[in-house]
Length: 101
View (spheres, rainbow, N blue to C red):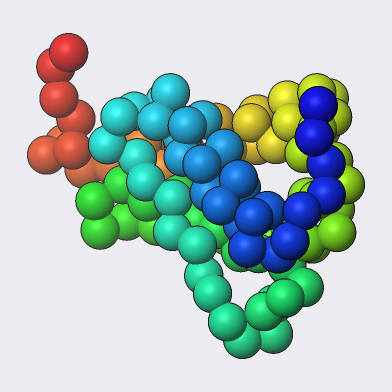
């Protein structure tokens, strides 16, 4: 597997990873990465978004993501965290958001 990478490389990987796992809950889910501020170059803050609603923020340190993105157990735990946030956002939706599939 792979670990390490520049801040931007790790950011791209993280966005893709989180998006893939959020969309497994519902294809309408998106990931919003909050850039700049106190985390610039040091970490990331991401939220699951469904329409206009945003989930709770997930804050991750750059070094933690870079060192562990090649570790299966770490990735499984992060995927589970995103699934939980996506499910709670979906459950809190309005009747208009619920669609028969």
